[in-house]
Image 1 (spheres, rainbow, N blue to C red):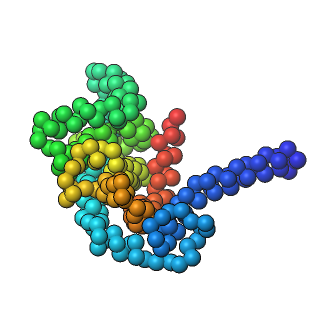
Image 2: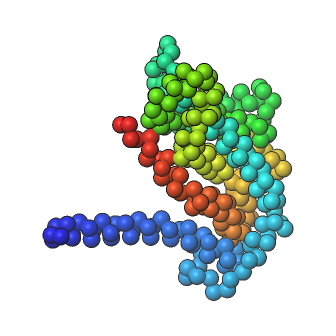
Image 3: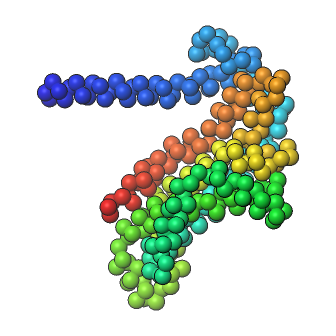
Length: 275
């Protein structure tokens, strides 16, 4: 190993260490704050002088944290199932079928996907109002799931890597598209399904802006909206309780990412093999 390579490796390691420190330190600070006595997030030291679980208890005794959690899980799981199915079907259709206007439709969806979601919020709000769906979880699920197919291109790239000989052989044996999709394509797409499902779940689980726009009554609140309202008041000082809630929000997503990381890596890389 020459001197130039050694210098570059040293610089790379230093940069990686700095990135890890800047990424992990805020998370550790929030976790430690959730165990700190008092209501202030500020402290002279990272580690609390006295550990307490009082803030976690307060979440369930003073606030409707369990209701917020169930509402969020219901929305996230429903959005994940519907969004994943719609995205898979959209990617499959663009990959397997050749129809008039296919490329124009793909380009249109790609362009629409580039616009920020804020642009459509007012229009969606008016539509939901006309459909009498405001302040319902159904409105949030429909909006999250209907926006998921904008990521169809990743699915299409993945399905393009599946050998055509497999689907052609199934067609010769008399299989229809439903049979091919569910019994041949889906078993080969486990990493893709895991990647889409986890992304949809995490997006719906942590979203704040749209849920805040649509859900108004206390019994409809999600975790993000409930935690924001917890510290939004002028006299609100429950920052350590807010930190405890943030830890409980991050817990299921972190566990899912750790358990499914092998499928996530495969799902993110296999679609790029065809080039």
